[in-house]
Image (cartoon, rainbow, N blue to C red):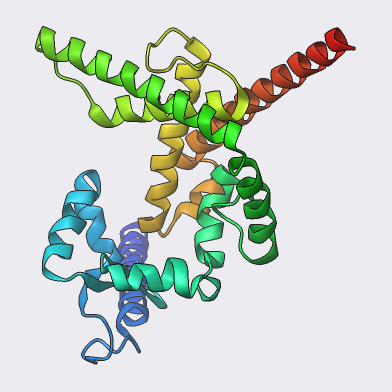
Amino acid sequence: MDVLYTMLTFIAFSFLALFLAMCFIIMTIFKGKSIGDPKYAPVKGTVFNQLFYFKKLHDYHTQLAKTHPTMRLLAPNQSELYTIDVRNIEHVLKTNFDKYSKGKYNQDIVTDLLGEGIFVVDGEKWKQQRKVASYEFSTRVLRDFSCFVFRKNAAKLVKVISEFSHEGLHFDMQDLQMRCALDSIFKVGFGTELNCLEGSNKEGIEFMKAFDESNAITYWRYVDPFWRLKRFLNIGGEAKLKINVKLIDEFVNGVIKTKKEQLTLQQDSVS
């Protein structure tokens, strides 16, 4: 009898704790968000709505954007603004770019995968990296080479799609585009042929899959309030992300090391 009473008490307290937690989350989501204020963009739900449409998230946002070019989704302690309005995009990315940072919230989510690269950092770090990148890509030789590489790989992509079409086979367009993009980026950036599009480089394919999967897991963090706990416990997708990031780092470091060795040999042969 005592055991049954203890079990029922534990279950009751568990449900009570869950109920209180849900009430707290709901309160933090809706409190102080100026939901009915016409000065702010209209609210079209919460970020948790995206969980129900995660596998077709782009379609979900496209449908919302058709009726509300600028809108908000509520999250605990903040609102997330979504816009396709050209004026807003220009305001954020051009005329007032310095006022809009990635912020700690986004940096915490993506740093495990992207490190402190130009897509993550703000302020002086961003300016420094942009200066280096803009200098490199302002070189006419590099621009011409980049165009050549992208056109060459685009032609390969067209050929692959044509072969699938002639054979009446289904294919994943996003996967093919990613393979083409990675082949081009690595050729321009490192002078290395990944051959992901042709599928002849096993290491390149493994890198591509790890990078693609890591992107998906990182993206999932935006709607998973427990991702930090999962990372701490090294379970679920966070455990897989850790493995993938290690594979990505080893592959990229290997490419850089090989390129350095090639440059050293070239310099030695010239001298």
